Image 1 (cartoon, one colour):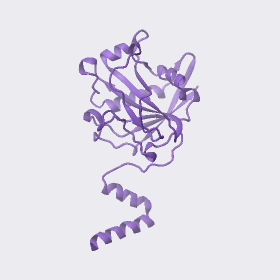
Image 2 (spheres, rainbow, N blue to C red):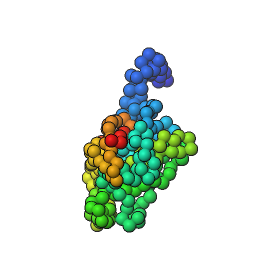
Image 3 (cartoon, one colour):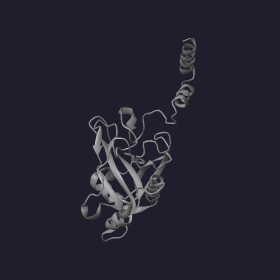
Length: 237
């Protein structure tokens, strides 16, 4: 009891004198490297209101929400119609023949809507005719997207779960390192100048750690990811 009391007293004293070091100590004790949720510009950290940076692929496992498109972006792409044109400019399009293949994923963005179904599923667009049909067969990059526009928090930011997958004979399993690879490919395309129907864009990229635990704990298919999240601000040129 004495030892426990001393430990609590030391921790409390540290909290008053050195709050940053105290929180570092707590993170070390509880085995997490995550930053504490705080106010952000252009989006809201889902953890502030019970959400998380993993979707709900199954009741136990999820896939990382590894790209955020900030509401500081071109207002046009924050609309549903504008976002569809934008992601065409970086090499994605709707599913083959408008048919959905695979599970419907849910995500809790902490916006008051709790777990909500994916708003958009887009696949790599290989060529003009039936381009995403080839992705459905041969595999490639794809993402699911949710908008943070709930009853309690409405930033209008897009949260994306991006990954690269195998072909249909492998039931579209994620390739090794596919969460990192898929994210990086999308970010590379967004950071380059892209265009569609006479509109031109280029994204500024901010890389963040500390929002998503690195590794494979709780990750669908037990595929490790590096914990980095790309925050995109997409500018109209």
